[in-house]
Amino acid sequence: MSAVDTEPAKGKLRRLNLTMFFPLLFVGGVIVVASDARTWWHAAVLSAGVLAAMVAFVRWAAGEVLRVAIPCLVVAAAVWPFSVLVPGGSSSFFGVFLVGSLVVPQLPRHRIAAAVALVAYIAAVGALRPLVSYEDVSGELVSFVFVPAALTAVVLGLMFPNKRFYDVVKELEESREREAELAVIRERVRFASDLHDIQGHTLHVVKLKAALARKLVDIDAERAKQELGEIHALVADTITQTKELAYAQRRLNLSAELENARNLFEAAGIRVRVNREADVDPAAGRLLGQVLRETTTNILRHAQATRVRITLSEWSISIVNDGAQRAPLPELRGLAALEQRVVADGGELTVEQEDGQFVTAATFPAREGR
Image (cartoon, rainbow, N blue to C red; front, top):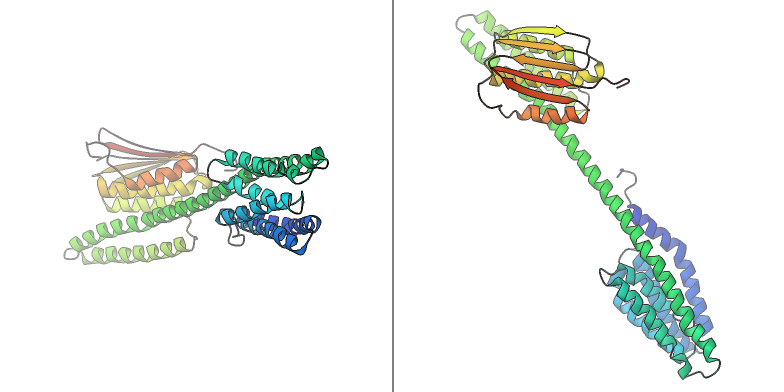
């Protein structure tokens, strides 16, 4: 989620429901009490049912209706038979109808059974009305049984899809959060891989040059000084690249990597041949440069190479070296991590070892406006 919009969509919807419907339900509750109450104490009892309904709605808007479900249902369920038998109000099923409609869809199980039980309870209590009123029994049954039960069933039927709607919104929010977490993880992996490219490569070259300088210090002091100067420059350049990486300013240059690889191979006594079949497309140059850098490090570290051939085309690079160990293909973690980035960018990285030769190749499909 964005830094600005941090409130979950589900919370916004519930708050909107609270703002829109609470005043309407409250006014409806006041009308119910005013129409059904005959005395002040009738009003007090009926108001308890309305209060229970309002509490349940507020907690439902907060996503916590089950915390108050039992007390609110008990109060509202007790007010309905009181209204039927004492003041004779047919509107006071409002409390139990509203509380039940909010609670039942939120139950973890047996929701259908609970919905049927709620409708049956409202109808059964309403059917008690003829026991205290003998005039127009059919009309009383319509007012106290059919209408309350039908309204409850209809609203319950609407609340189940409403519950599913909120569940879908919650799932979408969780999916968005997971996607954000994955993006952060991918960025961390990319950063770690780039840091490995910079510092791992440099440290290995520094090791080689330091060993060479150590051998030369007694027999060729000037050459040893030159090697030490190159080590100093290499470390300084690595510090700069690390800073650029930290501030997302680093851009790998294939030409610079090619020149660097040539110098390193020649310094290690390895003959290098570069074949340019075509100019490399700038869009592919960054990743091809990473392939070249990683492969150069692997050759210097793992192979006893005497010859290296680098072939470049518009969308590909191939590095072939001799001196590969006659053994199963070694595990090269740097190339494995790089392969993921190449594949993610639509390319293909292949690594082969045969007859003492090691081949590393990366290819991207030619695309216009890449």
